[in-house]
Length: 554
Image (cartoon, rainbow, N blue to C red; front, side):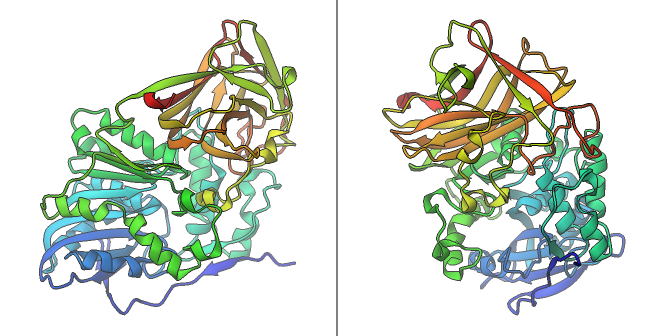
């Protein structure tokens, strides 16, 4: 039976925009749509550089353009090099600094632009904003990177667990000018060849995927900045915009933490976080009904767009036009409780709450161990097997649409290779407002191992919703040497009657590249070796979950 795949074709040009083929320094031309500002002959411009079709339904740029042009902004949207209508090779990350500079040069020199340009957009078209910052073009005056990171796809270190969904993205989205979709057989080994059947059927390989395999195996990411990092030359205000349930959120919050920690650029940072995932599905709407699915329903899309734009328009009014607009330093949606603002993140009044791991599965009921306010006096050691032939299955298929799928962690929590530690039932709401981490000692019969940690909200029915997560690989694991796993940040109210749960395991497949239980390159491993993992708790062992909470909440 022939291999089947779908192709996302180029959408028709938008009649409300004028397309230009903008020349780059090497003679390649990039397809660029210009939506002129309403009733303004010359003013600031907002630029979006994306690889997903500037006219397509998926990114809905034609639907967004009027929100900008009505306020006097010329809205400029470009297919990046090698994608859809643009010329050049299809290669993620490589050309965005130079192409960003050359596009800014073209935009800022047009008669309709007053020389002030902002950039806006999601994911890869958030990354192109950071690349433009690295280009140091003087016309760029403000950016609003959404659900993204300056180091999207890297850099990676020796402790990084490689996301297979990033590899799949590069294989499907960066093969040529189109976007492809197919069903991947993740049972194939080695995983470095997992997309070969698709590449053979289509008739070409995705060079970006091959680069990702090569660089991630060497401890690097899919991209690097050949010169300076954008953080080192940042001199313009940034509105970091994301979602608590976005799979890129941990990387984005690392960006924010790094920048607010630097005295030279801290005053340029603004933060706006919503209770959304990467595809902009909202916690308040789950489970997502067909009439609320903006991916398929135009009326739902119209309702979603104001939330999607957030404070970006006010931000540009202030920093591109110089208008007197009050921009909260931090604005976030507290899940289950609504919008809040504060002068900093975490907000004033926040403090650490430690919940200690106690009485693991072998010594407790079917729900595993306990999360306790105080550590047990008695020391215990819990052990489990990591079997590369029987990996813990990922609870979500598409991590970009996490809230649309709304996975229930009970699917995996009964497995003997998944540890759970659960708090008592909350007698009042608990507000989580900041970083989450786990500190534990991990031992293994293997020379290295991986640990995956999830923070879960358990409702009175037992349904278990992951709130945030973290994972890492450890070389020479030693149960007497505690290590820290960051579970990113969260803004969320745990309701009274609910419980918190920490889930630990050694695999999450196929979202993440599995550890083979040997020192072999996981991309090239064909078989693996079972290894015994150990985790001490109680007594003198450091084994706790660290939460950031509001003092008034508990």
